[in-house]
Length: 302
Image (cartoon, rainbow, N blue to C red):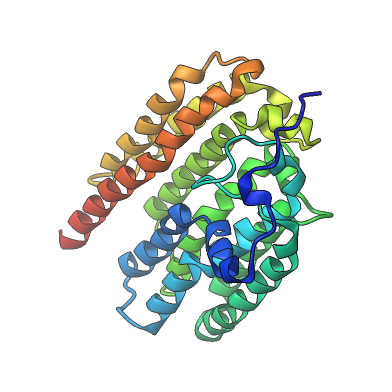
């Protein structure tokens, strides 16, 4: 068994003055846009107005939703995080045990008022989508469920975290979903599965040492990376069928495919080398978000 890495500075007990900062760090600020943007874009593109529902929903999927998602993960992945050399920055922190209870309470209490509002103003369809979204977030890391330790289901659940906000935004405005929109959501879902699987590759050694199973620990680094390449390619192919100009978005998954391709023969013993690709992935999200935004503006103005 791989010897555990020494605890990071982040794992030391934190003073009361740093609690808010640690909670914010636990929510992964660099990833906030990845859940808020799909909601806002779907809401506006399907005819939603610049109203309170847009503001509340966007704010919810920006911060509280991410605190629930990543806070639960940091609490119940504490042991494996201690062994993970990449924890301690934008990719996640090692959350000291003294803050575990506070984090869970903060996650729950920050979510409740937003969820009450979104249910009150929504339809039964949007409420079902919102319920699925929140349950997927909890089930991914919570004890007794731990979908993140069920290979393939881990990737599907993680993808749901990012696709479901778009579904909620869409269903708050309309219950009629066009075929092209369903196709685009399917492509987004495949992209999400591929991205989660690639992210798991860099943690193969740490997860195995911590007794955590994932799609990457089961399939191995090489097979997992090649699988992500297939999923990105399928995502791109789906987008090509959406018609003009939506088909232009097909270039986006290709960018991710190119990013992971250098690791297609990566052995498990060098799994941490994939971290360079993962760091590029985090910034590639910004570029892709810009490209998709320009495309959506173009579609809206046609």
